[in-house]
Image (cartoon, rainbow, N blue to C red; front, side, top):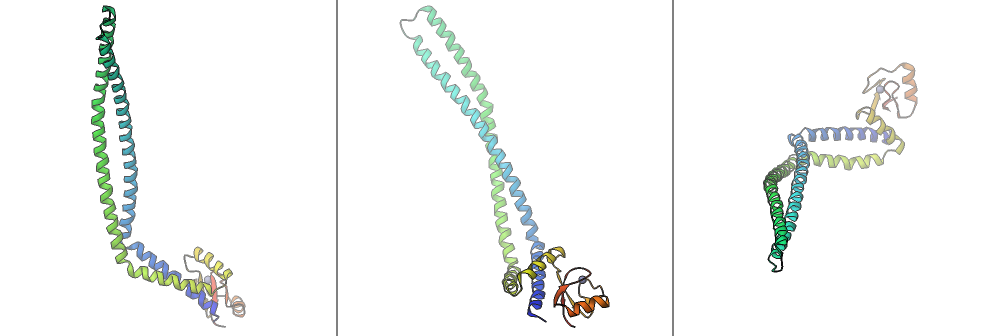
Length: 238
Ligand SMILES: [Zn+2]
């Protein structure tokens, strides 16, 4: 058999082995757990983002109220100082007193609104802390899953590395156009791209060739195409 034909058959074996190895990795118990851990992490990250946003909104509202409070308080102290000035008339003092009581009401209203907001902030911080604690626990669980996955899969990973290294060599022995045909057929046939013709029955589709087709293939190149299933056909003997 031509070298390129045996390289092609070896390429298919390598790729089928790689598919099996990858399926073994996916079937490991840690693999499914890692997927759900990563989904849980994503969900938690968005919950945490929302919680942080909510906490910041409350902080902004509180800061606004505190700024207003400070401004009214400054004004109150100014008015208070100005009442005590000796030159004030009775009417002026009365007006300033009214101003003072209006400022006191405004301050009281702000304080009244501030109380529940501070409680809300405490609650928001508590739920944010809770989410952070869950996130830390999830991360630790994920780390230990990854560790156990890489320990338990060491043999499979080593086999995959060997197969990939051999694959590079094997591919270098095959022409680009045949590799392109192989890639397309592998995709179409789930990895079973190449079949061998041994006698007059192709090894994969197993549809017995008509006499005429068989004669034509036997006289043709070693690497051909199955007239039935259209896989790449390696003609092994004449
Ligand atoms: Zn076929």
